[in-house]
Image (cartoon, rainbow, N blue to C red; front, side, top):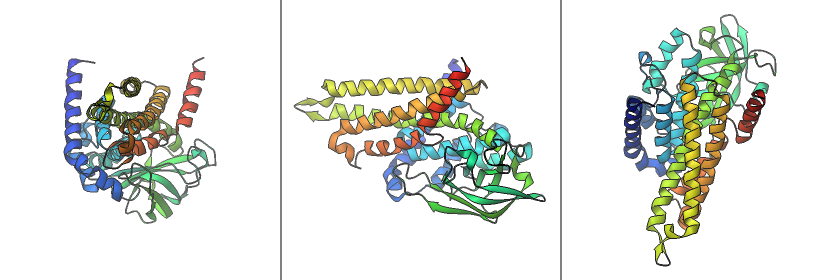
Length: 381
């Protein structure tokens, strides 16, 4: 990594950190308790370039790479996992799908608005009965002249209510046909497109999660991303990059929990000395620090490979799997170090504990990551 790149990363790190400290930290528990997605603050992030990190400057984006993107998500995630998750979903899923597979007209129409925060993006693949088993999706798009008519529902969708535009994958072919699904760009005011139930969640409570419902929703063919039938294949490529963002988010949450634990262990006195001086606590901190280092190395490696255009399916799955599981383990130990105070909302680690768990589920469960990794490993032999 060049000196110039390191310098740029440091500037981006400081910018993201300052934004998180000034505009997010003061409201973290307020938003968490009320389950409020702070739309105005989120759109303000577009003015700082955080909503179009990977989008070229010609589309009003920041024109940066995955190293910078990882840094932004990590710094936001250290303060609030919910906002980090929303930044990740907006950038990696909706915006990146249009960037990677949209035609020039679609890019010019949507990317500038998404990159600057004028539009908030959503992405719809998961359905109530088909989470990891996307090939059995029931949302169907039937051709009708110059339009496709969509019927069905998507669930667990980040920005399902507040999103101005969504990339939605619907079945246009036969069940279980990997070439039988198509991606559509659908604007919020399209007739027949509505938001459903907003989920009441354990963690990530300030990141809005809701249903998308389609009832005879007519979408013009000009809104198709790529070719008819390519939606599932596109989605798998999008998830390769998306898993890097969840690894970065996991890393941020883990660092937030770890840093709070180090500070607390130096301040908390028991038996006349700081608890950091006890081997039981020191060993916990050692394990946490080692897991963070390993997770960061994997995540940064995945980012470098992605920037070079290399095949990242295995390494992104590894990064997401390891970092998310490490984040849960680190947050758990953080609560233990804080003791009774770790279970109280006046202290930060209970929220890291709740937020971390989602990272082992979203954008492919840990079990799916192991399936992906094992298949990739077996291809190499």
